[in-house]
Structures are given as C-alpha cells and as structure tokens.
Amino acid sequence: MAVWFLFLLEPSLTNNLYWPHFNASGTSGRLVDLVNLHLTTVRTGDVDLTTMANMDGSTLAFPPAYPRKVLFTELYSLARAIHDLRNTTNAFGINAHDLLQSEEGRQWLDMRPIDNNPLSVDAEVAFLTSINLTRYDVLWQNEVVVAITETIWVENALGTQQRLALNGLSYAYAPWTSVELYCAANNFDKIGVPFAGMMGLQGDSTNYEEQVGVFYYQIGPFESIDAFFVAVPSPLGAVYTAYQISLFRSLESNPRFRNAFEALGAVSLTPLPPNFDGSGLSFFGGHVLCLYNTATPYSQTMFSFDISFICAFHNNTECINVLTRAQDTLAQMEFHQLAALIPQAVASMPSLQFAQYTQNASSVWLLLQQPLLTSDPSWSFFGWLAIFDWIQD
Image (cartoon, rainbow, N blue to C red):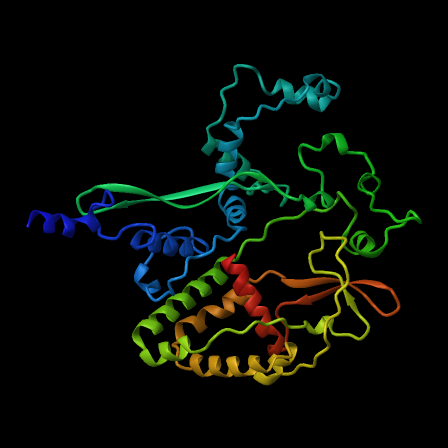
C-alpha cells in the first residue's frame, strides 16, 4: 500500500505547489503560453483563462518585437523616465566651462546651487506637466536588441508560491540599419561628418542613385529623420480582445461552429497591392532601410469586390475555397458586441501602409505606397489581416 500511495503522489510531488503534472510539458507550460498570449495585447487587468481554453496545443512563438513594444509603450512615462534617468548606471557629465560661455548658461548654473533640494519624482512630473511637457519619447532604433525578462508568481490554496519564467531575451547588438535615420547619443563624433561619404552611399556621379536616391529625395536626408514606435491604439486593441473572447466562447459552446472552424485548413497568401500593379515594374523590397535588395518581378493581377476578386490579388484557386468556407463559418459567430466597437477602432487607426522600392520600364526609381485600408473592401480584407498581425506582434 505504501508503494502504491507513493506512486499516486508522484505527479503531485514534482513541484512546490503539489499540483499534478504542473511542469513545462504540462499545465505549467500551458499557463505560461496563455499568459504570454494575453501580454502581447493587454498588459494590465484580469485574465480569464477559460476564454482561451480551446487554443491548440502548439507552443507560442515569442514575438521578437515584444520587448521593444514593452519598452516604448510602458517604460517611457514621465514618472518612469525621470526615475530611471536618476538611477542610470552610466554617468554622463556636461562641461561647465561651456555653460559659462553664455549668459543663459550662467543663469542655468546659478539656479542650481549645490545645496538645492531635489524635487521628488512626483513633484518633477507635476512641474513638467504644468509647462505642457507631458511625454518622454525616445527615437526608434535597431542597433541594440532590447533585453527583457518577465515572470509570474503562482500560489496554491495553501499559500505556497512558485515563480515561473514567462519569457526572456538577452541584450545584443543588431544590424543597425536605423543609422541611416539619425545619430544616436553615442555618435557625437560623427556629427558634421557627411554620412553618405562615410557609408559609401553616393554613386560614381556623386549623386544619390537607385534605392539610396529614393530614400534621400522622397523620405528625407540621412541623419535628419525622426522614427518613433507607433503603439496599437487602445480602441483597436479592445476590438482584438473582444474578438478573441467571442471566438473562444463560440468554439466552446457551439460544436457546429467548432467543427467548421477546425476544418478550415490554412492557405498562404501573397497578395499584390493595387498601387503596386503596373507593367514593367521591378520590385526591390518594402523595408525602406534596406537599400541594396535585388529586383524581384511580381505577377500582375486584377481585383474587385467579392471573395473571388479578393483572391484575384493572390492568384490561387485554393484561396477561394478557404475563404468561402471561412465566410460560412463566420456567419455562425456572434458579432453584436464586437460590431459596436469597430467604428471607434477605425477612427483611432494611424495611417498604415505598405511601401516598396520599384523601378519602372524607363529605369525611373519610385517609392510606391499602399494604404492598408481603402474604399475597396477586397483590398482592405488583406489590410485587416496585416493589422491583425501588427496587433499580435
């Protein structure tokens, strides 16, 4: 009996919470996946795990842009910025002799006696807000991969706690294509140096050519461009969350809907944006910071306003079959509450668009742009798919 009792206890003794099968391959791993899924779109509030109980069993991929999103959307409030700047481990200084060279500099120093009592963080925030300084922004960059570590504490009925690691990414250096946009704080030695010459961007004629020329003449001069991280608007995030809740509830409560949903299958879509549709065009990529991609020819397609014409952007017969089944499945879902949120979400939407370096048959270089949402619902279908991916990233 004693041996049998130990055999029964074994699944519960593998962790400090005494929960059976609470391990990385079981409930613990599932909990981590569910919380990570929630954190990608909603950072505060309660999590109803039952609304996500019908997710498939695959392990969630960690979005590479997630740490940068946390940094730019949560850690740059005035209070957090002031606190972190005061406690930075890097010491920076200003040469006081430079300040003494101007009347304004001398006044600035006189206002800061050695024995001056510093303001509290809250008092400094209140002061800055009173003079209409309400945000602390840092320019987007891709020189450094933002490090992040997130954990949660899980507590059982006995009050025993166990910490679980949700995700983690180490600090690292990246390709730094954002150097084309602006000088960073550690690039003071490069200020005044002709960037194009330093990077070898000019052609033999000393003019900007090809993608480099398109960037310079249509986007802006090198080292003079501000790039900011654009957060998903709250109303748009609310629509996404409401959709997820409605979807999982329908999967749980409606067997007919669940069977139809699971039978949908997958289809790969490579649509051609209508503004990119033209004869004799060669395409050189949509990342404006990548200046040396080689040409790629795109097939030409036609488009219109229903499922068959949505798929005309893609030129794939399987597309029509999958979307027809998806439309039939969607008709079984409850959308009344979700529909009420959509107008506000659309109104909050920033101007989102695809871009593409191109060259026409006359060898003229262009920067084509395609808004994600237009008056054409056939194209906007693909635009909403891109927006869905943006929210999840």
